[in-house]
Length: 215
Image (cartoon, rainbow, N blue to C red; front, top):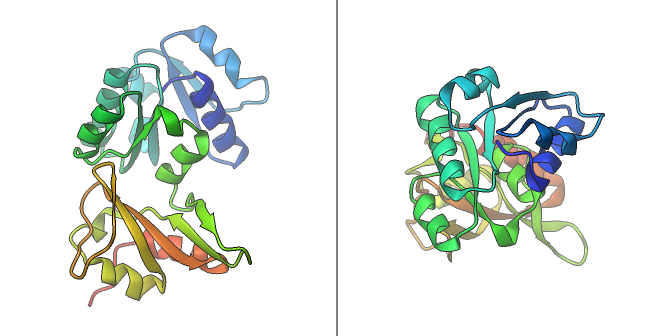
């Protein structure tokens, strides 16, 4: 939802990666930002209106990004996508960092204006979207934010390490970083940052995108 600078960049990036993309905007003229090579769907309407979302294919959607120019519209659309249509991978752009922390408690990852890039949105939407935040000089070890499937909620962070072979560097919880402590468990809305070998990142992502193995 939203075909401004971020929305159009995000849509083109996902389209070039082979994903089916639908873009919603209240102004049809905004779709010009997509360019002539964009092959996805465009829907003119209000992004939190249920009929508009259905027309854009929300019932079959794997992920939903709310990146319009309004905080209220973005969070409302994100909540409708998750709570009404059951879309698991949802992210909303929020201008006000303080409000972003409040919305984070609702379990919807937010991207503040200072982190306003399509890459940041992608890594919250796609299971194979983890992007290295830090790489050692050799290029072999990375710290990456790796999305966890909802079934990990309530499981200890130690289980993430055991099943992935990585190490939890830190956790972003309610908008603030936290160093892992013994017995710390995954909570809804947590963003887990793992230290792993670069050549193991894809395997780690696949593990985290699935429910944890039974103990």
